[in-house]
Image (cartoon, rainbow, N blue to C red; front, side, top):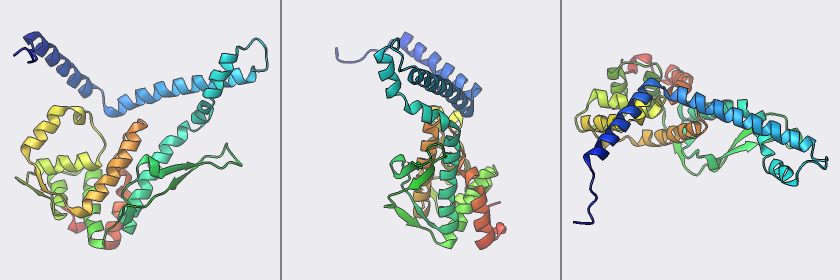
Length: 271
């Protein structure tokens, strides 16, 4: 058939060595290292742009400064403010994670839709140099958790944050009511770490996901955990878009410990 796409052995070989090279690079360079490189490059570009904008604006009254330079600087004057807020960005991400961890684990009432459109950067117009505050809006997907649900979720979060054994994480997952086809401990542990741990280089490898899902598959996912996972996923996605790779479990660890201290004995955990 003339409409069929023919793939030559050369194409397959090329694809194979590229995949191998890609996997090797991912194994050698951590996600945090890659993000650090990107953040450094962005910082250099941002600060150089801000410095150039300041210089053009300072000299804009001189007749020798071309008008298109002035237009360029006006279009990029926001770079000055971005450069000044660079250090605040990581603090803002940490604050967002902390606030939602408190709402979920301590209060049992949270917004499960914290996408970027529902997060405001509130600047004091009378004091532009002051660090901005964060505003949270549109609580249209509020989820409530009872005390027992919060304790069970706290146990899972804490076992992931403390890098406990596969068995401990899997047992805490089972306590929440998750059902899988083969009840694989390895699958449940890796799934939990993927949900609430930091992003690792192996998570970029399609073969890792394929192997994981060949081990087992989810038949029932607990309702009380679904919106918590959605919240964690959205917040981590926002953080990663800013080149930060937080562990949601570690960010929520102190809230999980407080919930267990207040409402559940440590012996209830899947150790």
